[in-house]
Image (cartoon, rainbow, N blue to C red; front, side, top):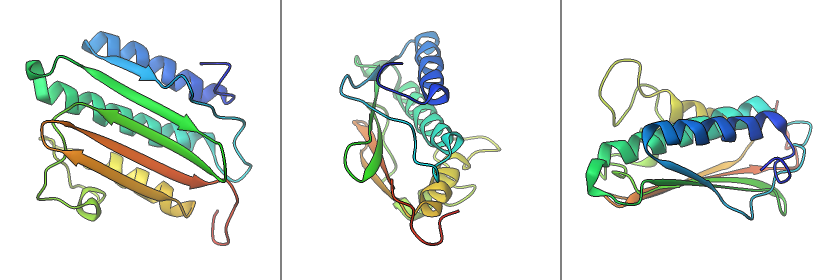
Length: 162
């Protein structure tokens, strides 16, 4: 992992999330082809940590919510910086996203598929970061099958990116 992920903070988060997965009875798999060189100057490593951390935590929650009905309690992460974009992908075999909420609704502050107060912040933060970098967010999900969320961040800074 440390050989393929040049940013130590991001590698550290992935290692920490791997340990958390074990504690929860899950597995966090990092795609063996994953690679991330040093980030371009305009992309902050803490933004990548926020995106990956929230996506992985959501995937853990989705697998736990599905419970004993799944045998493959694996969350997989793929990171790529080949080409003109940094691509972050998190996939789970969890409960899936509700079909009655579209992507725009899911990234709205305080909208959550989970019960309890203080929910509905993670995807909103991710969406905000992606918009800041003029990137894209893609969500694919099937109820009781799983979800794949992919984030695309351009390596080249565009006007209006802070």
